[in-house]
Length: 211
Image (cartoon, rainbow, N blue to C red; front, side):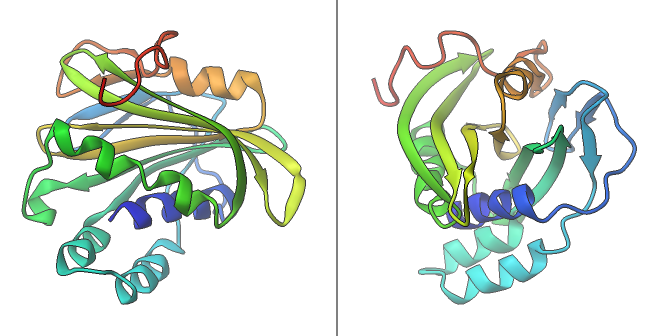
């Protein structure tokens, strides 16, 4: 389950369909919204995701993991600039998965990120944090990343995940510059109908997960 979330993100950074009409706010049926500037191009489809799910299902260690792989959805992918920075949002609907995750399970749900990203990125200097977003707990990781096949291509990788009433969700970025990272962090997010606020506050890394 964690593997397919992050592998889908890795594909989104490198295999992007032709960009569609830009939009400002995206609303998910799981009860969250996320706002991006209109000059970020929204990609509506990732044709590689079904193939990725099939590959991950073949190596899944349990029936629960297989179920999670089949249920995960690439809800949003957007890109901007050259070299392109990418923002993706992936979600796991509990109605499909058949059970709910709790805040206590959030770190376990999210912490597989680095291992999966290492398939495509050399990661260095990882940082971890935990912070509240309204009434929700967020888990976050940031690292420096260089594309393995093109080490000159360097990004800041950041991942923020939470558990909502209807599902789990992760926001992810491969930011090629500080402006893109700022866009990711300052994008307004509303979780379960709460007031929209910046996805990542300035003090996000002050508190370590589990403390």
